[in-house]
Amino acid sequence: MTARSAHPGAGALRAAGGLALAGAAALAWASLVEVRWYALREVTVPVLPAGQDPLRILHVSDLHLTPGQHRKVDWVRDLASLDPHLVVDTGDNWAHLEAMPALLRAFEPLLQLPGAFVLGSNDYVAPSFKNPARYLLPDARRTPAGPPVALPWRELVARLTGAGWIDLSNRRDVLEVDGRTLSFVGTDDAHLDRDRMPPAGGPDDARTSDGRSPAVDLHLGVTHAPYRRVLDAMHADGVDLTIAGHTHGGQLAVPFLGALTTNCDLDLRRAKGLHGWPGARPDRPAGAGSSWLHVSAGLGTSPYAPVRFACRPEATLLTLTSP
Image (cartoon, rainbow, N blue to C red; front, side, top):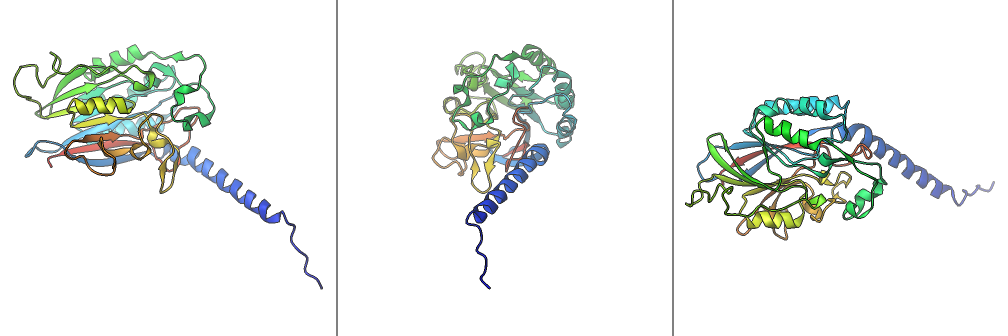
């Protein structure tokens, strides 16, 4: 009896079927599981003057909150149990005209703590439907979008500042936190070209306002989108640590390789986490001639691209220590 030979296209069909099944499984994981699998990152930054006790900063970013995201609201509320000394919010808080009540509920316990914030592009305008492949472009602003839907960002700013948080959108400010004096410099969203670096040495610069040597214990930079021009300006300003969001950590990553995009001109290896800036080796700690940079992968996504893969949504507890 002669064996029957397989159809020449059978192997290719099986391979295509296997790929389709794997793709469907990955999409289900990204859209049903990982996008809601919130993670608390804990990072130590050796940046305080010698002999000081640790200082805990909670970094929250990119909630992109919409009505009905009750699990995210409850998870953010519970972050207050970490008892941070300071909360830093790097923007893109909401993604819907009706999200203010949910956002205020999420932030309610955190607003009892000292805080600082900047706004992101989606604090000003709601996201709109677009081809998801746009996100993989080097800078998604280059593709035209539909008419923006304005969000009530002025009310948001009033709510946050009314609770005592400081607005660092193109501003400097100072806070007394845990017995220490912290100076801040911040910019508005560079993704919308709203960033204007406040000049150093003026009356709002806590390091020089009394005409003597700097009296602050720590100088922090805060921005939403970590464009290189902003990071360079903050490094030149002498910040000890810059805190940023916007990138979503790439949102869609390749396991063991990392992010596919940062949605700005920051290099892929700095898409999230703690790095030195500037420098050719982002995995090396900040040393002579560099400062620290922390980029959060954030807690949300656009409601039109509600997926994450190999990049869990996150908030970060930064524990600042003496070297």
